[in-house]
Length: 185
Ligand SMILES: [Mg+2]
Ligand SMILES: [Zn+2]
Image (cartoon, rainbow, N blue to C red; front, side, top):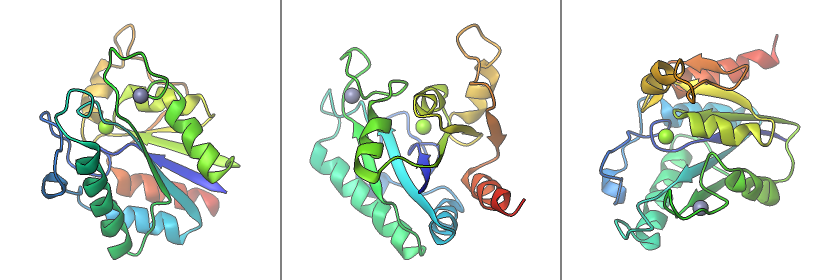
């Protein structure tokens, strides 16, 4: 199994400083659903791992989040793709949980659900996404969408350096092109 783990906000959809609280506020980035479909149709298992710290203070409920993720699944299906599993951390930064990225809990949840991949990619716009992926030896792929350009700018700061081997792409579409293209090399 070849697994592509996607961060959600800023990778698949437009990010929001105020949290995405309803399915209506969930807006896919251009080409993102087509990229997921291309991965699905080329033999990759696609999963999503997302920190949703708005749950802890009650900015959105688990039911709201389920509605948002239903929409995400439906958008993927409508584009001809499939998201095999969505896992999320509902905790806040001060809750000291084991699942909030950069911790590895969400990665382990995915592997428990889907099996151990022979190849794994982690796609994120934030350093902590890539750091979480390192725990399962995922190849770190940074996109410039969402907070990606800020992550690149911060990478020269003491705690901002990107994991060794991180590759940088304009967006998820470019990531999918690269992942699919590398099979034929
Ligand atoms: Mg993000
Ligand atoms: Zn958590």
